[in-house]
Length: 227
Image (cartoon, rainbow, N blue to C red; front, side, top):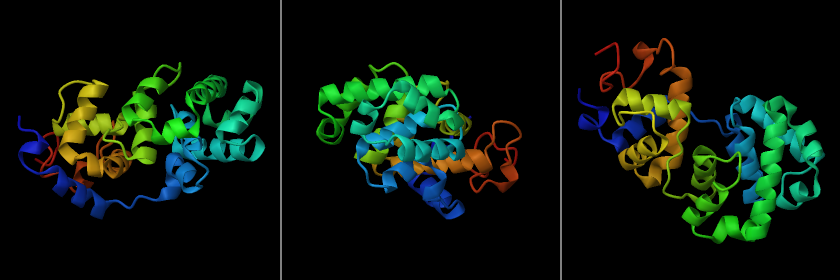
């Protein structure tokens, strides 16, 4: 079966999705954190908080942590794990995430702090952050794509599902899907395209009972019930 790439370009898909879905900065914790302009590390904190929960809860957790403890590197270094954990309960897995945030802060501080995150080669940043327990490829790639505009494509559950349904990849493998999406959309569109795939997955291309009749790409999708 032909995949979507055989019938329509990534640039055209990007245009269609951009016209179909409005992305609100206030709906994504990473964009909320980035918009506050407090540096790179708070954005990394926000992505960790978003693990295994929705943006609504992770935004609440981030703002509460910012108010009670602070989210800058020096704030987290001063705080105890208990201080962090008590502020982020709404995000779920709060003890685990608090420990990860503390470990990341200590590791980043050893490497040079904000300067390391902002000026080091992004693939070295990726390599170092992946050494921290609790930090995976998606967390790092979301951070790098937003803060550094690095040529990476973050893959969450929505992007994974859409890529497989489109026939861009054949198996549920993070790196395979990430490379396929990056190649399809191009590095210059990767960060925005990731958010558009989230919107598509949340509203239309659902895990169960996808709403193909509402999809602006149904006529191109090899998995669409409309074809």
